[in-house]
Length: 216
Image (cartoon, rainbow, N blue to C red):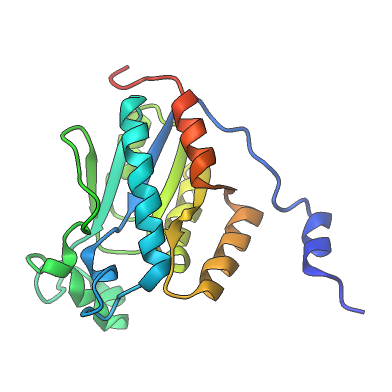
């Protein structure tokens, strides 16, 4: 009889908990209007909308605690000349051409003066960007990931986050996808190998208890 997946993973000690650090940063990945307007081909439905609502609760908590709040955006030259093979593979990425309404930050979120914006052209928030250098300068040891989509840019950023040496936490109800299946499968796999999962309430408690360190 085939071994149950959970039993198989337990033998390898997958889903082991990490020791969370004392200098976290909150990352809001790709909350673009393209995912929240039915007129656009990347519309993500309720899964993405609920992620946005929960991420919007976390950002003020992080700011109040002096914890860095980092937004990422996908942004291309018109026509995608800087988008490479990724832009060619996914035609809907034209939603992120500079100047389009679909590329802007989604309704329901806003950036504050001290927030950081990272522009990217590929799935991971680390690939080809200054994110790692910025986090190292801020002496961040732990990342809380929110955003869209779970099976795409969240997963890619999660893997690169732990690969760059950060304790990685995925806020499971503040990330979203256009279908429940890919969302659940990718959360399961990220939890097994790359990140700890927590919900919004747990993330609020962690952020609220973290030592203020902005500017230190």
